[in-house]
Image 1: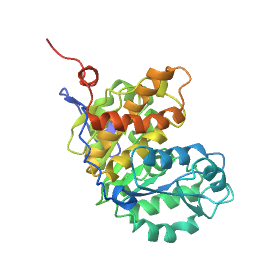
Image 2: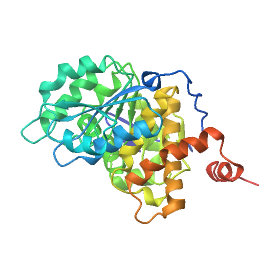
Image 3: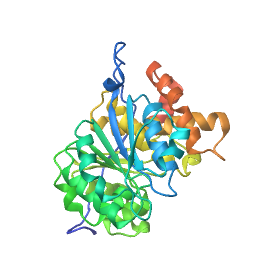
Length: 318
């Protein structure tokens, strides 16, 4: 029996899992401008957390997105800008702990109204003021939202906020964050990943990406996909932040939210595989995955060869 939030039920059937095979990305408009390839706001970062906002906002651009804005605490913005000058920065007022202050709520909502997509959470911190800001923003935002990291933690105890949203919601938890959402131990989830991803996706009416070796993607209709790209070298700090930006980029390039999630997960893993082929899995960093995103996009647009398609299509019964 699985008890998730306020609902307990017995799972008695085998749940079908589909392979996350590559989805075709729309061709780029040769006369398009940066706004035609997605405008995304990343609400991320806190004192001591410079990498997460950088990797998430820049990976959006590296995967083909058009206009990346980053709302992060004003004290850390210059350090991130020194490394990712292609990002447009929206410095934010800070709490005493160096995280994004609640004072920023209304200006953020006004900016979000102009965006296509919003990412909240990478390196955001667990400061209660910032966590409350996250909860109130999610209630008000009428655009697709991707919640990652500390953004997921902010909503873990308030699932009704996610369930009540009309616009699409994407959650990208690792096992620990999934444990907080499902109120189950990590060990229990690890033993029953498919069933739990399916239950949470349906009950929250959200798309769930359970990150890990062969990440799972769950949809509110009960469909679950398993991703075959990626390798153990990607188990490194910042890798999940690159994933958030990659998913956002796929939406900016013209895919629906549902397809953007599948394609983003696929491309993130594919970039990691290209990095591993050149430098090996040991010592791979999020920066390496980030740098291989353009090459992954180039190869994908040309069409994966038969060998790669065979690898990424999963096991076959013969």
